Length: 267
Image (cartoon, rainbow, N blue to C red):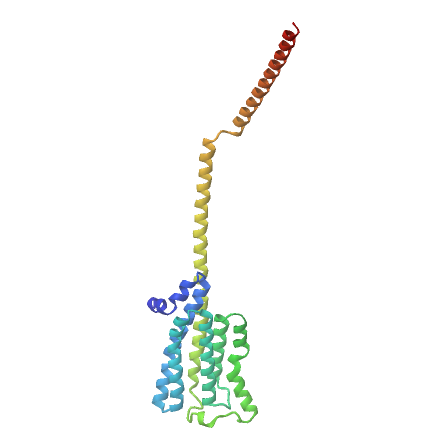
């Protein structure tokens, strides 16, 4: 798994030191690979049951989900990759809603929509998260409700898959389990990110302590080599007194020389 992570999102992980960005990138890769695996099950089931139209949709969805990791690697931009993933999920969800039973909100479809809402709230950011959580991810359900009000006017007959109107109810446990796994994975990754931040803070504090200890040690060595303040003050006082005495002597000598000049010049 580490090799797969390094291959697909290694550049994204290297581009930032934000541990929470690392957690989002890892979650995105996990869910892309997981959905690619999970969509093989309905694709095989459709082939066995003879649901050709659904098999085409599930096969196309499977191909898209398998391509997403390579798109993430090529884009090297986490936010765009996450938005692409949810755009693909929204389109797939809307198509499958219209193919199964566009006149009824199936519990399975509602569970998948709730799963995408939870994932969007956990992984997306800013205005894009509001757009998906409050509008785009609701479009499949809104379309069914509008179709019910219009008495099937939005139904596309050639898209309907006969015999698949009432899928087994136990299939709703798949999105429920995935939702629980998503929350658990998010909580785990965030907890790991917090642990990483705590360790990094501890390392930084230790390095700061070492630097401060080195500074204090150098300061003690400097203070031991340099004279004390009292010694400097005493030397300055002595030099000041010596300068005063020298000034007095020069003054007296000048006076004496002036008087000698006056006396000798008078005689």
